[in-house]
Amino acid sequence: MTEQEVWEMVDSFAYAAELVMKAGFDGVEIHGANGWLIQQFMSAATNLRTDYWGGNLEKRMRFPLAIVDKIDEMRKKYNRPDFIIGYRFSPEEPGEDGIMMKETLALVDALLEKPLQYLHISLWDFYKKVRRGADTNLTRVQVVHDRINGRMPFFASGNLYTADDMLNAYQTGWVESVSIGKSIMLNPNLVELIQTGREAEIESTFDWEKADYYRYTPAMLQGTMAGTDFFPPSKQNGVRYRTNYF
Image (cartoon, rainbow, N blue to C red; front, side):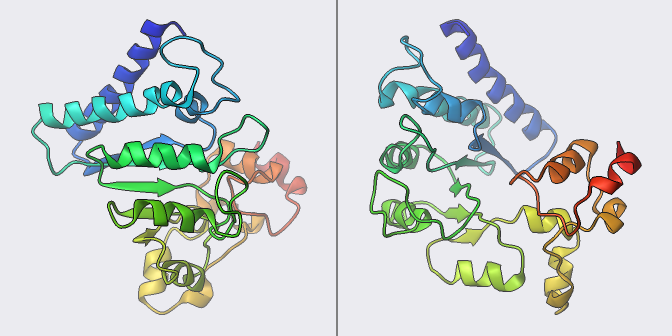
């Protein structure tokens, strides 16, 4: 992309937020995690630009921060001070040039200066320790929590399937809220199960015999079959069900 095209992409994020506002939603989460475009700009491993949008860390942070600013401008345009804006990020990447925790902490510092309502760390494991760039004896969640130091609500994910998983993570005191993804995929009625004391019914593996119940899209079924970390693990191999769904 040219420099101008990057600015146009920033505007596209703001336009998407505008549509969300017009549709009546309460807020939007900026997805700066999981290897998607915003994270690609943050990472020295993928951002090889030498212009305004790339180079040192300060320049690599310009894209995500510009998106935050533009969406906030849209919120002001529609006089929606109640509209929630959150930011989700992946704290570290593998590889020599991948994002390090110290770079994420610099991003967190910058985001704390923005009019956001919360920060959200995306993890495969809530208790995973720092790889590099900070105290490797501490978990990633704990390090970011300490950096935020109560200045903004902080959420975290990390393969929390059962009610006990969620409660134990919350009781660490590192987050104001835990976020749930995979368990909701398997248990569309998760909240009801917990509210009615039926925690024993919560599933933590994908059962191909009940594939229709989960209401997965074909792409989600393919991801489950491939065993990618984006989806819950399969109870069965799944190969013999291929012809039934594809």
